[in-house]
Image (cartoon, rainbow, N blue to C red; front, side):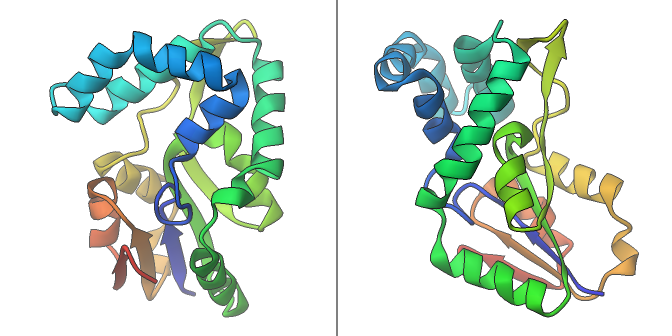
Length: 194
């Protein structure tokens, strides 16, 4: 059986779903006020002073720490089912459809939170490996429950979930440095293209 691994943000989508989700969840005024408050941290991230996972966790914590998990998931599901399609690349969806028509196993492997990708993936009959959020006593802590599913961690999570020797060929699709480890294990690699 063949396996197709797809990065989500920038590969399947035209924009970063994290940014789009935050705007959807808190509204544009709060989103932009939050970015202003976090501009020092964001500048450090852009300059390479702090890593991707630290920057993302800081964003998540700023906007969502203390949220009731059930409410958060409800907002995530609404975003997933009603908004994500607006940023999907037609050619990516066409490629996913092609893989499924061939009977290939298709897995989305994303640094984004599984919470807002789950319903979209389910609606397209796709498996999902993503970053998970920590929940304590029904509230978001603002921290990750897993490592950020980015870079080497993407490959670690794929290896933990799948017996890669069972699949040939392996296809992988990505668009950034965070996908290179996943692309490295593929027989057929597609970087910024389909």
